[in-house]
Image 1 (cartoon, rainbow, N blue to C red):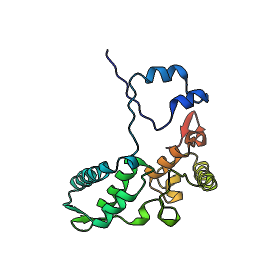
Image 2 (spheres, helix red, strand yellow):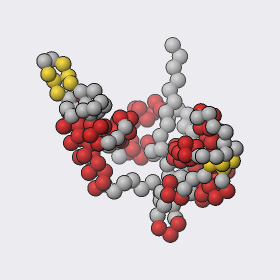
Image 3 (tube, helix red, strand yellow):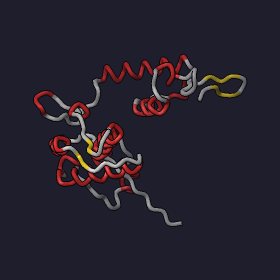
Length: 191
């Protein structure tokens, strides 16, 4: 069997190896043919090409006819720093297509993470206090529902979130949803 493994990361793995956060043997196995791709903020020319591609893709998937991107939107796309890289661009444009009511999409400035003075925010995570509070809230709901996520008695319902959103937040917060499940009569209860 011939197997090829492709891996991608935004991390500096050699620094992680030096710091003891990544295994040296695994680094050598993965570092056969490294390809470095600069962040989107360093590839301004790619932004418009990618924007057109994503708009066409999302419009086709939703059965809509979108022909144009608003001029102000083009300016916003090119002036923004894109700390979330292509994934962030993709999400912003998907939202624009979903909310588009005509043949021209536009985005709102509020959709982009900005810091005062018009400068863009560079990969600053939510304040640690807010993250901790969100994790506590989710874990309290999971404990109350004995680890059940979906359904009328699930944590998603109690928190007023779609199941997929709650699952995503649990993953992002690195919460262990399984520790809240309760064993009853030899079987585990929870979704």
